[in-house]
Image (tube, rainbow, N blue to C red; front, top):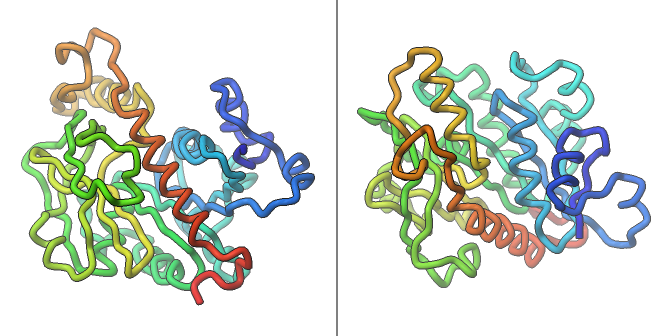
Length: 307
């Protein structure tokens, strides 16, 4: 089944060209089923790129998905046209006031790792989002900084600055092969990593109820399940396009920012060569498994979510 998004959203044409099944609202209305309602709280500056990445993953499942785009209420983006934001995004305060509920919510990362959580301008509202998920969302997926912020809010697990940026593609071990979120996963997999901070496994282990599903000897824990809060936290970037790390590397080189060549990304670590995508299949597995778990657990009557 396809993902339901407005036909005027840029992702509609992008996914159609890639062969991902998409439908507009008129087509969806003619199908006598309830689509899964998935929200994307997009904290990234490049909104459209991030929309495409997550829509691609959740749109590849056999279920009909209705994607809703959400932004922080007062925070303004300078990297995406105001007309796009006005047309496709709703502020969180409006969503919360409506009382509507979601089967799933993705909270993205944000390029603000260097700031203590309390110094982020929208931290108080983001904490409201986290608490709101417990009564209005069946399952929440916190990604990179979004996952770090959420695990900190609910469990006090801290983020720690790294001496050098973790940057490249790193092998991760499958720590819980029986987990339904890792159904079909190999014993290890490659995940793109791009961050200046880390979460420590010892602190995650000390927090009651948390289960580490994927971890790396080089860059630490990557995917953590939090059953008590119906949440997953991933600190790395399965959603990245093939050239996302290249874009980040080229940007820093062009600006004169010190940056290492992303490890294990370019063939022979040569940035003159075309990078290889070695994580796409596991990315689709993870997000497909997440959608399937939501489908298996969410009530048909959405009013029953969070009760």
